[in-house]
Length: 76
Length: 209
View 1 (spheres, rainbow over the protein chains, first blue to last red):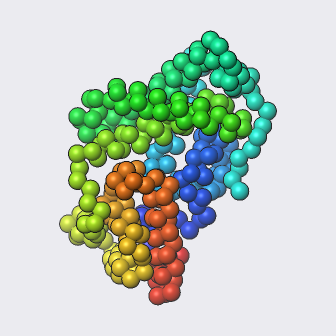
View 2 (cartoon, rainbow over the protein chains, first blue to last red):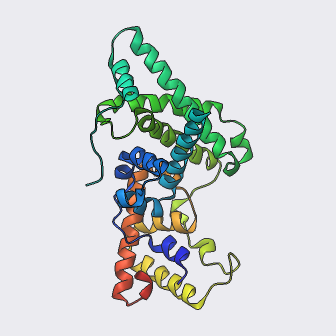
View 3 (cartoon, rainbow over the protein chains, first blue to last red):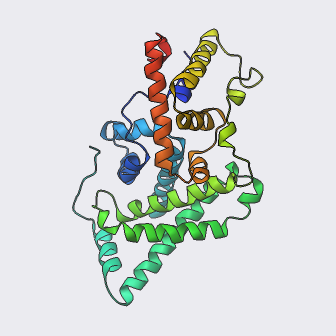
């Protein structure tokens, strides 16, 4: 089975808290990602949501990119 | 229950809260500083996404970024009591700026495109001329889902499902055109997919697993 098309049509079967609940803890998730800790274990519901929600996934990528660039600035 | 926790504030976050809640000139200075950093975030994000935007949008983002920063400051100040210190204050504030600018960017990118939710269709998702050659299994899944969309989803679920999955319209754009919210549109999509998975199990299709 092509997983891409399956996910696109049917989404993830993991518990998904939705956009608002994900947004509530997005800052914690992004910082965990930056620290290199196991964010998937700490925030499984966020991971499940981001797999299925392109808008939240893009926003999260932006937040992490912002924190990364800031982190680089601080080390200069 | 998600992992939202209250922890002791780091020095920088504590100072932000103290100054934003203070009276007098310190408060005004903190508001200005907050606006400055959130404006930097909205500009950085717009720059990061510039290659995904139509050329006329990518070349005219100053006002969009400023408006996004303005609204992000209002959102942050309005939700200040909800900050629990589980992250740095600036990280928490950044996410509001990211949300404000990304919603605006998606809507601006689609502002000149016609979105007729009453006319959404399977479009290129089922058009053999698009995408790589499909396997028999792939075609079978598409065919089953297509039948179940018509027979098991509500009208709103069907429209949202096709708009997102087939027409690839961003949920922020659908929310804008229907006077709804990202969360509400996503919930309709989520419920539609769950209903489809259940229906696929009932008809014995292994793709539901």
